[in-house]
Length: 492
Ligand SMILES: *[C@@H]1O[C@H](CO)[C@@H](O)[C@H](O)[C@H]1NC(C)=O
Ligand SMILES: *[C@@H]1O[C@H](CO)[C@@H](O)[C@H](O)[C@H]1NC(C)=O
Ligand SMILES: *[C@@H]1O[C@H](CO)[C@@H](O)[C@H](O)[C@H]1NC(C)=O
Ligand SMILES: *[C@@H]1O[C@H](CO)[C@@H](O)[C@H](O)[C@H]1NC(C)=O
Ligand SMILES: *[C@@H]1O[C@H](CO)[C@@H](O)[C@H](O)[C@H]1NC(C)=O
Ligand SMILES: *[C@@H]1O[C@H](CO)[C@@H](O)[C@H](O)[C@H]1NC(C)=O
Image (cartoon, rainbow, N blue to C red; front, side, top):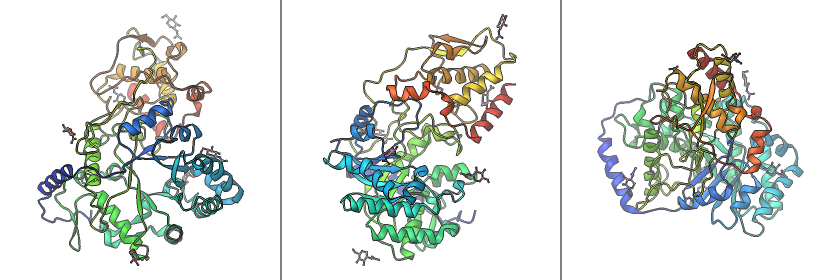
């Protein structure tokens, strides 16, 4: 890798001193959290809002504009970013009326009494990812323009800004040298138009930066460079020293904007975080190291070599989402600082005096019982592969497999995990533990070490209805099918 240059630097010592300085300085206001809702069972919105407040979050970023959630944010003091999903971009781009309706229903109605402090509308979510094959390239800017026009018409354009959360892959740099940054070639001109539009309207550039994905995609990516504790071969960009990917990536954006005369455009880090399961590099230790390192940076309020001053950022993510597409990888369902039930996964200090993360309160669970492989069933049972396949396809088996939290289960443990996941997602329905001659309900917690056999939460009616109407609505992308195939092969 060209960017692995050897430059001598006693990075670790410096990082430790910095970290010490950081925690002696006290807090800077305003860290945000992403609140995603692609779950089979959700905590009540009011519980999540209380969690946000208890944990000192001051801003929340949503991926749509769910009215139950927005209502729960009334008078919460929380700044809110609402979102327009990619599948609505076409409508927003092609109909001024649709954009006006969206703003009326999903922004004006909620801010009119000053009750919900909506500050941003995120138009689309990472629409220029290469996996979308350019599907959203022609419609993202027109959608931005129509929403902006609708905000102006509604008299809200000075308090509510439009933006478009983009992945850090919309710009690149040869050898990862920030000062050589530029927009990605295939969307170069489009990006210039979008940046000009944002600048003209006083809107921020929103970027999601993921060192974890760099590590996931590239086995030779240096692990230490993904974190904030110093790196033995930092990048030296004309005297500016970069010891971590986040900072170098952020400054690549600053340089790119500057190159085209938009050096003053404000930048929001829309998503930053590290997953805890579903991959060999997705674990509690790494997630804590990354997020604590990022928080130290954040609290220091010093910005990056190219842009001083506090960072504006939303951690990804608040709570695990067990119905997310795992096409990008099994880790997708494990980005939360908290598990699905609002339990913190690890300690994380947001301020110098922090007592760590605060769990959700008054969480209601289903009964303490689990569905497992029957002790009398045989691994040679011809129904086994189909049953496990069915369970995994309709539930969540992303904690199974190499490098995951349940990697140490034996073959029977694997089967039990799959059965239990299905049983819990089906609200412990009796019929959901009736795999022919294979399964049995138990009152003994089968959890082992880090491998948690969950008990589902008692979800609000609306969400549970979604389940009752058919788990087929869970996404079954190629990644899952491949996973199932491997799983079944292993079992057989
Ligand atoms: C408001 O947002 C919700 C949730 O994203 C969406 O389903 C609905 O269609 C939007 N309303 C309008 C009028 O566009
Ligand atoms: C993008 O193209 C690939 C290959 O042609 C296809 O498999 C995939 O489904 C496409 N994705 C989208 C979002 O259109
Ligand atoms: C950036 O902001 C500074 C200070 O507000 C101003 O002097 C400068 O002209 C601005 N630059 C651009 C390119 O807008
Ligand atoms: C967080 O703070 C507590 C004390 O407030 C401390 O014991 C703990 O080590 C800190 N954790 C990290 C990861 O810095
Ligand atoms: C379950 O086991 C019983 C007794 O061994 C057998 O008669 C029955 O056919 C089995 N059922 C299925 C669905 O395999
Ligand atoms: C359990 O399942 C996972 C995922 O398919 C597989 O990688 C692992 O080897 C299995 N373990 C055993 C002991 O079968």
